[in-house]
Amino acid sequence: MDRLIRDGATLVQNVDDVIEAIGSFAAMPFRQAAQDYRLAAPVDASERDREAVIGLLGAVSVAVDEIVRQSGLPPMIVQIVLLELELAGRLERQAGGRCSLIE
Image 1 (cartoon, rainbow, N blue to C red):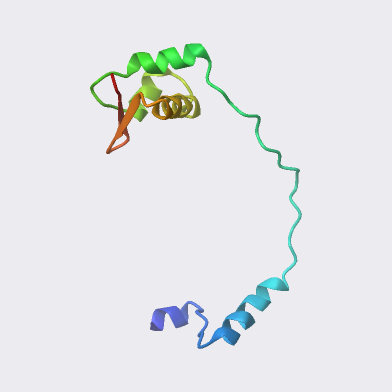
Image 2: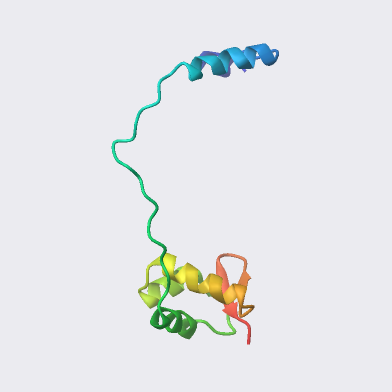
């Protein structure tokens, strides 16, 4: 506890103490973003991407990282294909980031 006090911790005994501590944050001005942030366009896997990922899957579980490495596809595309398979009931996920096809 001594270390907390040395590091600048604030003693809070009731709600008023919390409101007082938060009040100092409310007085701080917010900075405007240097640029406008826009949502990225939705990404979808092509039929070729799907075939590549499915070709690397089988009854024996394989690590998702290994699928990314062997397919050469971006991790986001591999995850999209795996999610599609999982939602279709064709993929089983195991511990350790591994998955296999349900045949």
